[in-house]
Length: 132
Image (cartoon, rainbow, N blue to C red; front, side, top):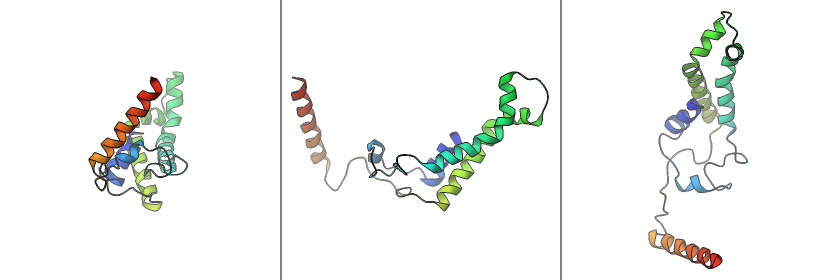
């Protein structure tokens, strides 16, 4: 999972976020992807996990017999992170997403802060009217 997060933030988005889109839960958000799921992240996570399973299962069972897979599990952070990072970056290169480049301000500067503050006050008034 760490490899996916690092690849997405540092390599795919280059540290730029669409802050307002983080709070939008519909297809207009840059983070909506396909029906709300980023298949690239799921595939990269699975690809980073599967090489470690042959050593992870015996370790969890408490089996002490020596195998190369058991030693591989001890390196899982480095191997899983690297595989997930490379796969996630590769999938985003082959299948780019809308909004994966650039950033946007939290407040829409075209409309100005005052309009956003007015909308917030309207929402607060409606909520307080419903409570009362």
